[in-house]
Image 1 (spheres, one colour):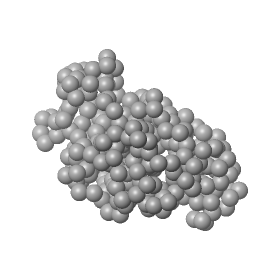
Image 2 (image 1 turned 180 degrees about the vertical axis):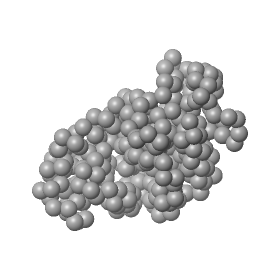
Image 3 (image 1 turned 90 degrees about the horizontal axis):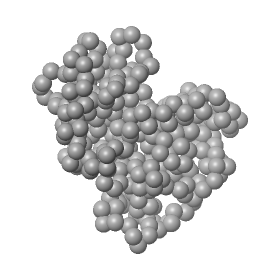
Image 4 (image 1 turned 60 degrees about the horizontal axis):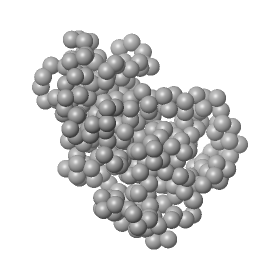
Length: 295
Protein backbone atom coordinates (compact mmCIF):
# COMPACT_ATOMS: atom_id res chain seq x y z
CA UNK A 1 0.00 0.00 0.00
CA UNK A 2 1.38 3.43 -0.81
CA UNK A 3 2.30 5.77 2.05
CA UNK A 4 -0.08 8.54 0.96
CA UNK A 5 -3.11 6.25 1.16
CA UNK A 6 -2.20 5.10 4.64
CA UNK A 7 -1.93 8.62 5.98
CA UNK A 8 -5.08 9.67 4.14
CA UNK A 9 -6.98 6.98 6.05
CA UNK A 10 -5.24 7.90 9.29
CA UNK A 11 -6.10 11.57 8.81
CA UNK A 12 -9.77 10.79 8.22
CA UNK A 13 -9.76 8.50 11.26
CA UNK A 14 -8.25 11.24 13.40
CA UNK A 15 -10.61 13.92 12.13
CA UNK A 16 -13.66 11.79 12.85
CA UNK A 17 -12.50 10.74 16.28
CA UNK A 18 -13.45 13.91 18.15
CA UNK A 19 -17.13 13.38 17.47
CA UNK A 20 -18.10 10.80 20.03
CA UNK A 21 -21.26 10.11 18.02
CA UNK A 22 -19.04 9.27 15.05
CA UNK A 23 -16.33 7.17 16.67
CA UNK A 24 -14.15 5.25 14.21
CA UNK A 25 -14.47 1.53 13.76
CA UNK A 26 -11.43 -0.64 14.30
CA UNK A 27 -9.41 -0.91 11.07
CA UNK A 28 -7.65 -3.98 9.78
CA UNK A 29 -3.95 -3.95 10.51
CA UNK A 30 -2.53 -4.87 7.14
CA UNK A 31 -4.97 -2.96 4.95
CA UNK A 32 -6.59 0.43 5.27
CA UNK A 33 -9.58 1.13 3.09
CA UNK A 34 -9.53 4.19 0.88
CA UNK A 35 -11.50 7.18 2.22
CA UNK A 36 -14.96 7.57 0.74
CA UNK A 37 -15.82 10.11 -1.91
CA UNK A 38 -17.63 12.08 0.80
CA UNK A 39 -14.35 13.03 2.46
CA UNK A 40 -14.46 16.77 3.02
CA UNK A 41 -12.02 19.24 1.54
CA UNK A 42 -10.67 20.07 4.99
CA UNK A 43 -10.01 16.39 5.60
CA UNK A 44 -8.14 16.06 2.30
CA UNK A 45 -6.01 19.07 3.19
CA UNK A 46 -5.05 17.39 6.46
CA UNK A 47 -3.41 14.47 4.63
CA UNK A 48 0.37 14.47 4.42
CA UNK A 49 2.66 12.18 2.46
CA UNK A 50 5.01 11.59 5.37
CA UNK A 51 4.68 11.37 9.12
CA UNK A 52 6.19 14.25 11.09
CA UNK A 53 9.82 13.26 11.67
CA UNK A 54 10.41 16.51 13.54
CA UNK A 55 8.17 18.98 15.40
CA UNK A 56 6.00 21.04 13.09
CA UNK A 57 6.44 24.77 12.79
CA UNK A 58 4.81 26.45 15.78
CA UNK A 59 2.95 28.99 13.66
CA UNK A 60 1.22 26.07 11.95
CA UNK A 61 0.67 24.31 15.25
CA UNK A 62 -1.12 27.31 16.67
CA UNK A 63 -3.80 27.15 13.99
CA UNK A 64 -4.03 23.38 13.50
CA UNK A 65 -3.21 21.90 16.86
CA UNK A 66 -5.74 19.21 17.73
CA UNK A 67 -7.44 16.13 16.37
CA UNK A 68 -10.98 17.41 15.99
CA UNK A 69 -13.88 17.36 13.56
CA UNK A 70 -17.11 19.16 12.90
CA UNK A 71 -18.43 22.29 14.51
CA UNK A 72 -18.13 22.05 18.26
CA UNK A 73 -21.05 23.39 20.26
CA UNK A 74 -21.76 24.31 23.84
CA UNK A 75 -24.16 22.38 26.05
CA UNK A 76 -26.93 24.66 24.76
CA UNK A 77 -26.08 23.90 21.13
CA UNK A 78 -24.47 27.28 20.40
CA UNK A 79 -21.28 27.13 18.29
CA UNK A 80 -18.12 27.39 20.38
CA UNK A 81 -16.78 30.20 18.23
CA UNK A 82 -19.79 32.36 19.12
CA UNK A 83 -20.22 31.40 22.75
CA UNK A 84 -16.63 30.67 23.84
CA UNK A 85 -15.71 34.18 24.96
CA UNK A 86 -18.76 34.81 27.15
CA UNK A 87 -18.63 31.28 28.54
CA UNK A 88 -14.99 31.80 29.55
CA UNK A 89 -15.86 35.03 31.34
CA UNK A 90 -18.71 33.33 33.15
CA UNK A 91 -16.44 30.50 34.28
CA UNK A 92 -13.77 32.95 35.38
CA UNK A 93 -16.27 35.00 37.35
CA UNK A 94 -17.43 31.82 39.07
CA UNK A 95 -13.93 31.10 40.39
CA UNK A 96 -13.21 31.95 44.03
CA UNK A 97 -10.96 35.01 44.31
CA UNK A 98 -8.06 32.84 45.45
CA UNK A 99 -8.21 30.88 42.19
CA UNK A 100 -8.21 33.87 39.85
CA UNK A 101 -4.80 34.60 38.34
CA UNK A 102 -3.48 38.17 38.18
CA UNK A 103 -3.63 39.79 34.77
CA UNK A 104 -0.46 39.54 32.72
CA UNK A 105 0.85 37.62 29.72
CA UNK A 106 -1.80 34.90 29.88
CA UNK A 107 -5.49 35.70 29.65
CA UNK A 108 -8.34 33.45 30.77
CA UNK A 109 -10.60 32.64 27.84
CA UNK A 110 -7.78 33.36 25.40
CA UNK A 111 -4.81 31.23 26.44
CA UNK A 112 -6.51 28.91 28.90
CA UNK A 113 -9.95 28.08 30.27
CA UNK A 114 -10.86 27.83 33.94
CA UNK A 115 -12.51 24.53 34.85
CA UNK A 116 -15.58 25.14 36.99
CA UNK A 117 -16.00 23.37 39.28
CA UNK A 118 -12.35 22.41 39.74
CA UNK A 119 -11.73 18.67 39.52
CA UNK A 120 -9.92 16.57 42.15
CA UNK A 121 -6.30 15.61 41.61
CA UNK A 122 -4.19 12.74 42.91
CA UNK A 123 -0.92 14.28 44.07
CA UNK A 124 0.81 14.84 47.40
CA UNK A 125 0.52 18.19 49.24
CA UNK A 126 2.76 20.80 47.68
CA UNK A 127 2.62 19.10 44.29
CA UNK A 128 0.81 20.36 41.18
CA UNK A 129 -0.69 17.87 38.74
CA UNK A 130 -0.29 18.50 34.99
CA UNK A 131 -2.27 16.11 32.80
CA UNK A 132 -1.95 15.52 29.07
CA UNK A 133 -4.93 13.83 27.46
CA UNK A 134 -3.66 12.24 24.25
CA UNK A 135 -4.21 9.60 21.56
CA UNK A 136 -1.43 7.53 20.01
CA UNK A 137 -2.80 7.95 16.47
CA UNK A 138 -3.14 11.73 16.78
CA UNK A 139 -0.57 13.49 14.60
CA UNK A 140 -0.72 16.61 16.77
CA UNK A 141 0.04 14.57 19.90
CA UNK A 142 2.97 13.03 18.03
CA UNK A 143 4.22 16.50 17.04
CA UNK A 144 4.03 17.66 20.67
CA UNK A 145 6.01 14.66 22.00
CA UNK A 146 9.55 16.10 21.54
CA UNK A 147 8.50 19.25 23.41
CA UNK A 148 6.97 17.23 26.25
CA UNK A 149 10.09 15.06 26.50
CA UNK A 150 12.36 18.11 26.71
CA UNK A 151 10.08 19.84 29.21
CA UNK A 152 9.98 16.76 31.46
CA UNK A 153 13.75 16.91 31.87
CA UNK A 154 13.64 20.50 33.14
CA UNK A 155 10.20 20.96 34.69
CA UNK A 156 9.96 22.14 38.31
CA UNK A 157 10.12 19.33 40.85
CA UNK A 158 6.72 20.20 42.27
CA UNK A 159 5.00 19.32 38.96
CA UNK A 160 3.66 15.77 38.69
CA UNK A 161 3.12 14.98 35.02
CA UNK A 162 0.40 12.46 34.15
CA UNK A 163 -0.64 11.10 30.78
CA UNK A 164 -4.24 10.04 30.23
CA UNK A 165 -5.29 8.33 26.97
CA UNK A 166 -8.53 9.71 25.59
CA UNK A 167 -11.50 7.30 25.67
CA UNK A 168 -13.87 8.23 22.87
CA UNK A 169 -14.36 4.94 21.03
CA UNK A 170 -13.09 1.38 20.43
CA UNK A 171 -9.85 2.37 18.67
CA UNK A 172 -8.99 4.86 21.41
CA UNK A 173 -9.75 2.26 24.08
CA UNK A 174 -7.51 -0.30 22.37
CA UNK A 175 -4.63 2.17 22.33
CA UNK A 176 -5.40 3.15 25.94
CA UNK A 177 -5.18 -0.51 27.03
CA UNK A 178 -1.78 -0.76 25.36
CA UNK A 179 -0.62 2.40 27.14
CA UNK A 180 -1.67 1.18 30.58
CA UNK A 181 -0.33 -2.32 29.96
CA UNK A 182 3.10 -0.91 29.18
CA UNK A 183 2.90 1.26 32.30
CA UNK A 184 1.94 -1.76 34.43
CA UNK A 185 5.00 -3.60 33.11
CA UNK A 186 7.27 -0.68 33.91
CA UNK A 187 7.91 -0.03 30.22
CA UNK A 188 6.75 3.55 29.84
CA UNK A 189 10.02 4.03 27.94
CA UNK A 190 8.19 2.44 24.98
CA UNK A 191 5.71 5.32 24.82
CA UNK A 192 7.67 7.08 22.01
CA UNK A 193 8.11 3.74 20.24
CA UNK A 194 4.32 3.29 20.01
CA UNK A 195 4.02 6.71 18.36
CA UNK A 196 6.82 5.80 15.96
CA UNK A 197 5.23 2.45 15.09
CA UNK A 198 1.92 4.09 14.22
CA UNK A 199 3.14 7.22 12.46
CA UNK A 200 6.39 6.05 10.86
CA UNK A 201 5.91 2.32 10.33
CA UNK A 202 2.23 2.54 9.32
CA UNK A 203 1.11 -0.03 11.89
CA UNK A 204 -1.94 1.12 13.85
CA UNK A 205 -1.55 -1.68 16.44
CA UNK A 206 -5.33 -2.13 16.24
CA UNK A 207 -7.35 -4.60 14.17
CA UNK A 208 -11.04 -5.21 13.54
CA UNK A 209 -11.40 -7.66 16.43
CA UNK A 210 -10.03 -7.82 19.96
CA UNK A 211 -8.03 -11.02 19.52
CA UNK A 212 -6.21 -9.72 16.44
CA UNK A 213 -5.57 -6.42 18.24
CA UNK A 214 -4.04 -8.37 21.14
CA UNK A 215 -1.83 -10.31 18.70
CA UNK A 216 -0.57 -7.11 17.07
CA UNK A 217 0.21 -5.57 20.42
CA UNK A 218 1.81 -8.81 21.67
CA UNK A 219 4.08 -8.76 18.64
CA UNK A 220 5.03 -5.15 19.39
CA UNK A 221 5.78 -6.08 23.02
CA UNK A 222 7.84 -9.13 22.06
CA UNK A 223 9.87 -7.10 19.57
CA UNK A 224 10.69 -4.72 22.39
CA UNK A 225 11.83 -7.26 24.97
CA UNK A 226 8.59 -8.10 26.80
CA UNK A 227 7.69 -11.73 27.40
CA UNK A 228 4.30 -12.54 25.78
CA UNK A 229 2.93 -14.18 28.94
CA UNK A 230 3.84 -11.16 31.04
CA UNK A 231 2.11 -8.91 28.54
CA UNK A 232 -1.02 -11.09 28.46
CA UNK A 233 -1.21 -11.13 32.24
CA UNK A 234 -0.93 -7.36 32.54
CA UNK A 235 -3.27 -6.75 29.57
CA UNK A 236 -6.37 -7.90 31.47
CA UNK A 237 -5.13 -7.07 34.97
CA UNK A 238 -7.17 -5.30 37.61
CA UNK A 239 -4.83 -2.29 37.60
CA UNK A 240 -5.10 -1.82 33.83
CA UNK A 241 -8.89 -2.14 33.88
CA UNK A 242 -9.09 0.31 36.80
CA UNK A 243 -6.93 2.82 34.95
CA UNK A 244 -9.12 2.49 31.85
CA UNK A 245 -12.20 3.26 33.95
CA UNK A 246 -10.48 6.31 35.42
CA UNK A 247 -9.42 7.50 31.95
CA UNK A 248 -13.03 7.18 30.81
CA UNK A 249 -14.18 9.26 33.78
CA UNK A 250 -11.57 11.95 33.17
CA UNK A 251 -12.39 12.18 29.46
CA UNK A 252 -16.00 12.91 30.44
CA UNK A 253 -15.23 15.05 33.47
CA UNK A 254 -12.92 17.35 31.54
CA UNK A 255 -15.27 17.33 28.52
CA UNK A 256 -12.39 16.54 26.21
CA UNK A 257 -13.33 17.40 22.60
CA UNK A 258 -9.84 17.46 21.08
CA UNK A 259 -6.35 16.19 21.78
CA UNK A 260 -3.70 16.98 22.87
CA UNK A 261 -5.52 18.57 25.80
CA UNK A 262 -3.69 19.86 28.88
CA UNK A 263 -5.13 20.25 32.39
CA UNK A 264 -3.28 22.03 35.20
CA UNK A 265 -4.16 20.94 38.73
CA UNK A 266 -7.74 20.15 37.76
CA UNK A 267 -8.44 23.90 37.47
CA UNK A 268 -7.29 25.08 34.05
CA UNK A 269 -7.37 23.58 30.56
CA UNK A 270 -5.44 24.64 27.49
CA UNK A 271 -4.00 23.35 24.21
CA UNK A 272 -1.38 24.21 21.61
CA UNK A 273 -3.72 26.45 19.64
CA UNK A 274 -4.83 28.53 22.63
CA UNK A 275 -1.26 28.96 23.86
CA UNK A 276 0.07 29.91 20.42
CA UNK A 277 2.49 27.04 19.82
CA UNK A 278 4.14 24.10 21.54
CA UNK A 279 6.83 26.11 23.37
CA UNK A 280 4.30 28.68 24.51
CA UNK A 281 2.07 25.88 25.75
CA UNK A 282 4.72 24.58 28.13
CA UNK A 283 5.62 28.08 29.30
CA UNK A 284 1.95 28.62 30.08
CA UNK A 285 1.79 25.28 31.92
CA UNK A 286 4.80 26.28 34.04
CA UNK A 287 3.25 29.65 34.89
CA UNK A 288 -0.13 28.17 35.80
CA UNK A 289 1.57 25.47 37.87
CA UNK A 290 3.73 28.07 39.65
CA UNK A 291 0.64 30.09 40.54
CA UNK A 292 -0.98 26.93 41.93
CA UNK A 293 2.10 25.98 43.91
CA UNK A 294 2.15 29.41 45.59
CA UNK A 295 -1.41 29.06 46.87
